[in-house]
Image (cartoon, rainbow, N blue to C red; front, side):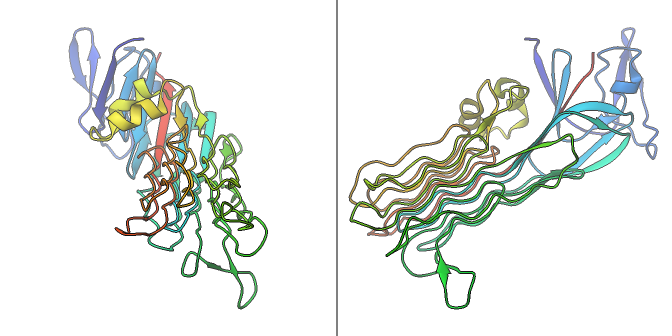
Amino acid sequence: MSPIKSTQSRTGGRLLRGGRTTDVTSDIDGSSSEISGKREDNLTTLLTVSGGTKIESGNDRYHVFTSPGTFTTGAQLTAEVLVVAGGGSGAGAAYGAGGGAGGVLHAPSTSIAKGRYDVTVSGQGYYGGFYNTGGDGDTSSFADAIAIGGGGGTGYLNGPADRRGPTAGTITRKGRAGGSSGGSGVAEPGSPVSPDAVLPQPAPGDYTPYGNLGGAGGGASGPADYAAGGGGGAGSVGTNAATNGLGVAGGNGRAFPSFPAPVIQPGIPSPVRPAWTPVVGPTGLFAGGGSAATYYNNGAAAGITPGGGGAGAGPTSAPGGDGVRFTGSGGGGGNYPQHPFTGWGGKGAEGIVIVKYSVA
């Protein structure tokens, strides 16, 4: 693999030409931007493309967005685009379900006309407090492709974790709808609770949407049937609550091999890279569902899911794990609020947007 170079996009670009540099100027409102000069004569591809953090690897260039911005190109491009929304947060105690992963939109090959395109990137979610449903993730977008945030997980007992039902005076513990839906909480008494639906993600036809349902909550048929479901992931559904009370895993993330961590990681904020890089890995795993908390007197809960979903809390009062940042993963569920009352749900992760094109 060729050495990887990264730069923050900025104005005032220069083109390497025959051992000297020459200033170049865009024909979009006269502003200038940095280019690499991979081929001296290929200005239609290389001229005035900016936005996010630029990374070059071999004949490919990546623009990585971890916050909102603008993608600008002075020429038509054929590009591969990945849009990952923010993950839903896990529910707070008791026996909180995992949050659903943010929805994912992937265009293996799409034409981007000359112009400017708005990019939005979901921030980190807010955690589910004691007996509170986890917050839903926010959207991420590239132009008209809008990935929908993951649904929050739900919990057990009375309070805001009990959502209003479809008719007056009813409640529901269904995992919230989203790009992937959150895991469901426990019904007492009753049958296992299925989550709400996966929401549609508006996008042009050359994008494929990814998202899955969260797992069903327990039916409280016995002391060990109080566990919740895992959040849905971009690669698979969340696990249904276990009848032995153990916390279950969220759904797996999905691999996008064109966006491997060893190449993309220069675009990730440096404090986050040590956790982000091994989770995304060489196969480009994103958007894992959050795992659910275990019943308070049972064994260990599930850990981080493939793609970065937060771990569920173990058998004592404990918070759920946050989704690994900038993966769009769901947060883990928090556990029974015994002293010292730390059983909040884990935060859903920020999303990410990546644009890749050839400069050969």
